[in-house]
Amino acid sequence: MRFLRWTKKKVALVLGISLIAQSLLLHIQPTYAADEKKPAASPSPAAATTPAPNAGTTPAPALNEPQVAAKSAIIMEASTGAVLYQMNADEAFPPASMAKMMTEYLAMESIKEGKFKWDSPVTASKNAADVIGSGQLIAENETLTFKDMFNAMSIYSANDASVAFAELLGGTEENFAKMMNDKAKQLGMSDKAHFISATGLSRADLKNPPPSIEGETKMTARDAAILAYNILKDHKEILEFTKIPSLKLRATDKTAMINWNWMLEGNSTNTNFKKYAYAGLDGLKTGSTDDAGYCFTGTAERNGMRMITVVMGTKTEPERFNETRKLMDYAFNNFEIKPFLNAKQTIDSLKSVNIKKGVQLEVPLVTKTGLTFVARKGAKDTDFTVTAESVEEAKLVAPIAKGDALGKVKVSYNGQEKTVDLIADGDVEKGSWIRLLFRSIKNFFSDMFNGIKGGS
Image (tube, rainbow, N blue to C red; front, side, top):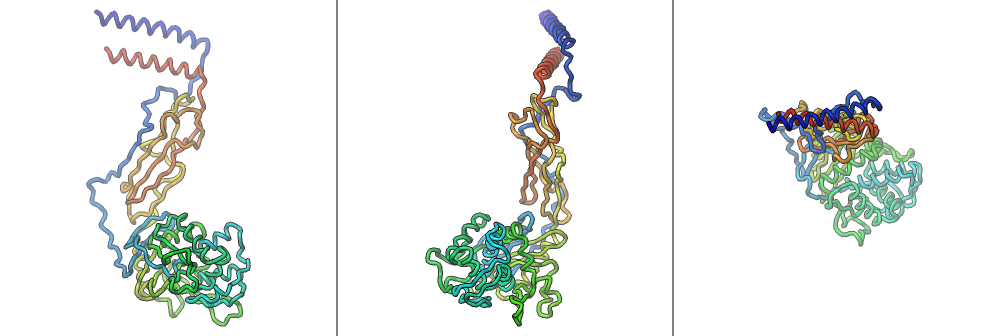
């Protein structure tokens, strides 16, 4: 009996409020969006995860990694920075002339910033002309164009040209070495990366070793790869120089500068080097000293995928190229660029989010950009883990503009992790107060009737 009396009171209350609401509706007659309904519980801001659904399946067979005869080595894919192989990659060694990659970076940066042009004059001082080692092409007070001096450094690894750039850009080679160290930090190289000269020569071989900079020039294989990665990302025109097999520095020269990089694809018809030539290889920098052994940072592109390889401390000049070939073959034979997400793609685990105080109750989400990975050939989508998450609920309030970032999707694969924004795929205008009022009344009745139904 008590339950019946309680139910009658509730029904009477509902009928009374309904009459009032209907009266208001007759006078105001608001319009409703076609999709106006009480939203389901929003997934925001909790993460929605799609784990790789291949648990219990047979894992892919292990790759046969190359056995590299070097003190250290690494393979990095050039568009993503993904490391595909490493051996002692974080141990620092003398890089010899591979240090000139930093000199090249700073020289090209000065062009990009408008400080110099490729036809700007560069004059070699006595200090530059007297430097020992590779080069010895340029006389004291001789002036060449910036481009010609860069050719000497990038093709023939000329120490005199490197010092000329150091003095042009830094005033002194010592100041320039400080610039090199500062740039190394900016580019994300490790604390082990250290430069004392523009050439990579050891302190004992420098005519004027820098008194304010201690130690020797050193870097890790990973540092060399990071430096090469940044050169290719920021100054890809470097390849127009490094791919040249031979070139006369001056039109009047009787002999040409021969590129120390025997693996250049352009050497495929060279009798001396054709057995080392590698299809697609167009850079980047060799280096050798007694302390460093024979080093090489190589880069090659095939089928739209570019690789960076580093070997440090090989025992002979041919060996650095033979070991590089092992790394390149391993990379190109076993890996590929795999597009995983497209721009404006819907993520199944978070297709939309609920919006408060809007004309619409929710807005669809799509990816802002696509994502690509360096994956093993034949990798399946199920090898990837996708996690989607919306922004905090307090930010999901109208008005919302198309393109607003309302969440993120994180994709993980074999140690690689990438994130892209999830953006609104439409506008959501703020609802008028009368629309919001009637939505509240509607939701109130819905909750009440659901409560009565549940209590019966």
